[in-house]
Length: 360
Image 1: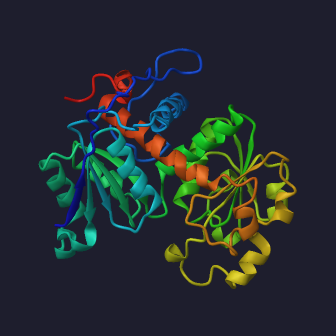
Image 2: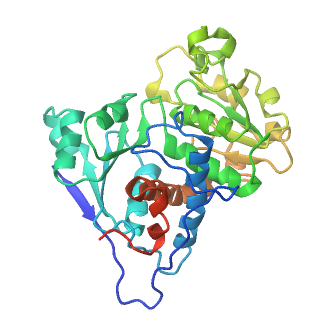
Image 3: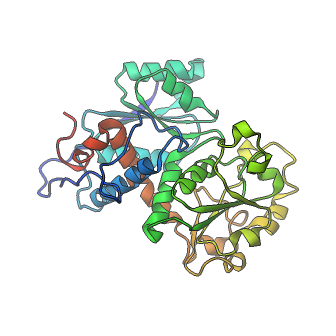
């Protein structure tokens, strides 16, 4: 099993880490956190989402210091277990762990015992037996992190499972929007593209509606999941997804939007016959400057990445004045720092998470 192990600690520097207060809710009450794992946002309360976002503000302060290192998770081991390729998510979890002083191990699944037939359950049990405290999992199969969480007492963080969920991406999306607008209540967020195969879209739907945003999803009918319209669901499944507006016309979807989020075509998860051609898709659903003119004047343009410029998003707007795509990437480190801290220390311990009384 091939691993890369890193754990960074600064010594002998003059500007020692400064503590940052634990997060408080907007009403001034104590922070809320009741999770051993982060699997999706469908079981997060609004207060718990705000706890993560508030603590992310404190983590941003740490990252802005000249020496961006704190000993909060010293002695804590974080393992990245990625069964699928990743750049942004994997790198940001590695950086988040290092900044907090944790030992970070990134497994190369291609050269691990997985290739000999080792199951996911055996892998996470083995990692826990070696001392892993938190295991960050990306897997092609929906539900894989839930299975892992049932078979280990290590904290499991879902870094994307199939077409199901990507909660940490959703949280950084929420944080990025909130940093521009403050309160998201009543803000119109238009999500354009392959909704059916997008794990980001599913997690964003839970987070955005919890914070009071008005969400509209738009794409070809073949890329909209069956049952997304509440009127199509049986009574027992009414709570399966949050309420959203559904559009197949991109101009109507973008009209008056405060945020436009283009989603990547998930070609690796699609079966044939869903689209006539990429050219046809781009003609009807590409986010362009002309279409964005219908949005609010101060609208934000987002994309979870990696983006296919010239297909779901035009090259000029991807790098335009309304684009905050790089801010999303930057914010991912602080959001994941907040989550690792909460899982390791709880809400009451996060005052130490930025420099005071870290793990022994």
